[in-house]
Length: 300
Image (cartoon, rainbow, N blue to C red; front, side, top):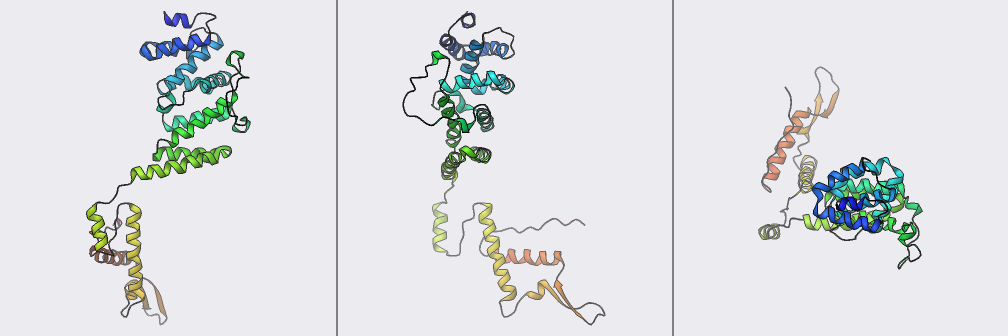
C-alpha cells in the first residue's frame, strides 16, 4: 500500500522520500524487487518521482543497491545528473550514511562520474552560510552541494587509513589535477595514521638486546633484511680488496689461457662466484643473526 501511494500521480517528492525511507528500512527484501522494476523502466513513474526514488535508495543503501542503480547512472546522462544532484543535496555527512559502506573501487567510480557530469573547474566559489536564494521548490538544487558531496569522497577514503584507500587517493590525485592538492593532503594524513596503526613495536627483550649489543639490528620487514644483506656485502667488498690477504683471486681470474702468452683477466664463472658469496653471507651473518642462505635454482 505504501508503495502504491509513493508511485501515485502528483505525489510530492518529499512525501515520496519519506515513504521510500520507511520501505528501505523496514521492507528492504520486498522493496528491492520493486526497485529493480523501477531501474528497468517496467514501472511507469514521472521523471521527478523516479529521481526521488532512486536517489533516496542510493543514499540510504548505496552498497546494496549499487548493482541496480549504477548502470542507470552510467547509461542515462540526464537521469544521472538529476539523481546525483538530489543525492548531493540530501546527503547526510555522518559515518552511518550509505556512501561510507561502499568499497574503494566504487568510491573511485562515483568520484569519476561526478567529475564527468559536474566538472571540477565549473565548481562555484565556496560561500559561507545558507543559500536562501536557491530553495528546492524552485527546482534548482544548489550546485555547491555537488562540489561538497564530491569532496566528501576523498575525506571518506582518507578516514579509512589503509593501504587500499591510500592507493585509491593516489590514483585520484594522478587523474584529477584540479583537486590534486586536496587528494595529496588526505593521502599524507591517512598514510601517517595507517603507518601508526600498522606499526608493530619491538618487545622489551628486543630493545634490551639492541641496547646491550651495539651491532645488533632489528629486522622486521623486507627492507630491514635488505639493509642487513647490503651491509654484509660491503664487508665482503672490503675483505676482497682492503685487507693484507685479499680474496680478489677467489672472484677474479688473472693468468694465461691455454697456449696464449698474453695474460687474461676477468671474473670467475657466475656459479662459482655465487657459491662464494653465499658462503660469505652464511659465515658473516650467522654470527650476528640466525640466517638461512639459499641460492637461486640452477637447472641441470
